[in-house]
Amino acid sequence: MRRFPGSRLLDRHGDCAWRCRPLRRWSWVAAVGVASIATPASVQAQPALQNAVLTDQGVYVRQRARVAAPFSNVEGVEAGPVRFSLAASYSLEFNDNVNASEGDREGDLIQVPRVDVGVSARISERSELAFQAGLGYRAYWHNTDLSGLTIAPGSALSYDLQVRNVFVTLFDRFSYTEDVSAVADLADVPQFPRFENTIGAQATWLPGDFLVTGGYSYEVYQSTSDDFSYVNSVSHLPFLRGGYVFGGGAANAGVEFTTTLTDYESRTNSDSTIVSLGPYLEWQVSDFLHAGLHGGILYLVNSLTILPEESFSADSYYMRLDADHTLTGHLSHRLQLDHRVRNSVEQGASFTEETQANYQIAWAVTEPVSLRIQLNYIHGEQTVAAGVDPSEVYDQWRGGAGISWSLSARLSSDLAYEYIVRESDQPNRGYNQNRVTLGLSYRFE
Image 1 (cartoon, helix red, strand yellow):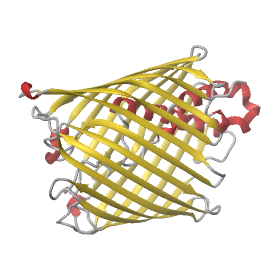
Image 2 (cartoon, helix red, strand yellow):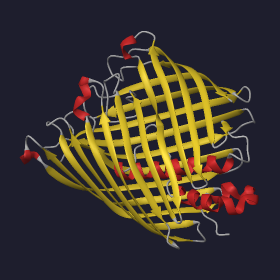
Image 3 (tube, rainbow, N blue to C red):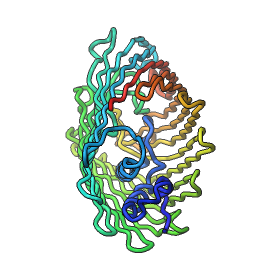
Image 4 (tube, rainbow, N blue to C red):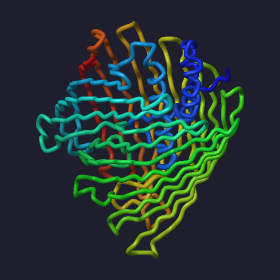
C-alpha cells in the first residue's frame, strides 16, 4: 500500500487496512501543514496562509484521534458514534509586570480556573463533526479591573468530509484573549482584549500524483476595549495551492497563492490588501524527521479612506522554515524561522514586518515526568501609512522552561517559568517581565 506522510501513525493498526485507507489519505492531506503548529508568539507569514495551515493542522489532529480511538485508550469516552472529553484545571500565575511597562511596573497574582470540552461525532465512515473549546477566567488579586473570561486559541466547530478523492473541511474557529506579550508590537499597556472568529471552507482534490487545494474564510477581529476599537475589522481570506506528490508519498511541492483583504470599521485606519505567491516544499524525511519550506513574494496595498493621497503600496517577501525531529522515544525538538508582513495593531501604524526564530525541545525524563524549553526571538518594524521609514524598530526575546508531572492517570501538575524582554528605538516602549505558573489539571472519564 502506498505510504503518505502521517500514515506511520497508523502502521500498527494494519488489521484495519481497508477501513483506514480513506483515513490514511486524510492524514496525508493534513500533514502538509502539520509542522506549522502555532506557538503563542507565532503568526504565519501572511494571514490567509496562516488560516490554511491551521485548517490543515486541525484536520490532521482530528484524523489521528479518529483512527486511534478504536484501538487505544485515548482521552475521552465513546458513546456509540460520539466521543466526549472533559478536563478541568486551576493555575496560579505570578507576573511581576502586569502593565508590560518600562516605568510603571506592578506585580500581581492571577488565578486561572479553566474547563476544556470536546465532542466529536462520526456521521459516517468518511465524515465527522467535532467541537472543542477551552473556557477560562483570569482573576487578578490586586488589579481586579483586569479580570475577565478567556476562550482558548484552537477552540472550533468543524466538519470533515471525504467524497472519493476530494476532502472537504467546514470550520468555525474562535478565541478571546487579552495577552499583550503574544503581540510583539505592543508595549506599555496591561491588556489587549480581542475576539477572533474565522468561518470558512477548504477542499483538497487528489487526482493521482497531483493535489489542488482551495479555500475561502471570513475573519472577524474585534476588541472589547474602546482603547483598541481602531483594530475592529473583517477580512476575506481566499487561498489556492497546487502541488505534485513524489517520493512514494513522502514529499510534495508546488505553488501557493493567498490574498488577505481587510476592511476596518474606523475610517482613520487603512484598509489593506496583502497578496503573496511562492513555492513550497513539505518532506517527511523519515518517521522521525519532517521539514517544510514556504516562501515567495508579497505585495501590500494600504488605502486610507479619509486621506486617499496617503495611500501607498510596498513590496516584500515571506518565508517560513519548519523542522521537527524526534531524536529518541523520549526526546524531540523543533525549529521555526520565518519572515512575515501583517497589519499592525498599534494605533498610528499601518503594517508590521517581522522576522522570527523559535526553538522548542521536549524531554520525557521518566514515565510521569517531562521537561520542556522554548526560546523565541522577534525583530520587527512598524511603518505608518504616510511614510516608507519604520516608525518603530523593536526586538522581543522570550525564553521559558517547564516541568510536568503525571500524579495519576487523570491528575497532572505543571510548573513553568518565562522571561520576556522587549527593546525599542522609541522611548518608554521597552519592558521586561517574569512569569511563574503553577497548575493542576484533572481529566474526567
